[in-house]
Image 1 (cartoon, helix red, strand yellow):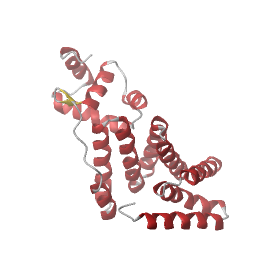
Image 2 (tube, helix red, strand yellow):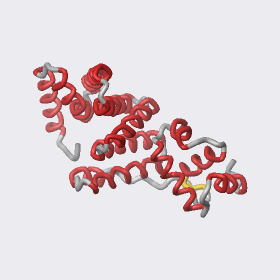
Image 3 (spheres, helix red, strand yellow):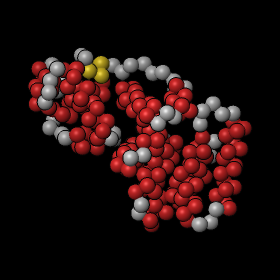
Image 4 (cartoon, helix red, strand yellow):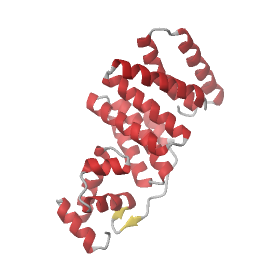
Length: 227
């Protein structure tokens, strides 16, 4: 939520708790629970946010719909991030991002990118944070979501990450994994990021090194003692 007073945040949290108490049917509760997690986390009510995420996960597992699975994964990831489980959060948020993308739901995908940016910040991965924020900004611009763009503009600036030659720290990390023979999927799993993010890194690496293949990038890595 963007620049809301604490009183407004607390009132929104109280309101959503009241609505959940009055909402009985499973379908209606499922629609409310994802929003409830976001509001309750903003208010600092981790206990109720965790309970809402757990209930949403139970409903999603029972119904098996992709949209509910994505909402549940995002809610679970957000709660884990608030609890300090950064790697657990990354796993669930990557899953959510991939489902939102497959469903063609850019607004939800963009919000997941912002959560992934927070994951990167906790890891000290400034380059990853920048890429996730840029991805969210691009999606919000496509949707003309001015309020959300304003939210991004209020994100604090971070210093650039340490570079290895012309590569950022994260790009150098990805290049080492390319040189070890890992696929984009394997790299994504090892770094707890999405395959789409890995693909962006690989494209940037190729452009910066002036190469067009993984083998050429690998040769560059060996020539410059990156391995």
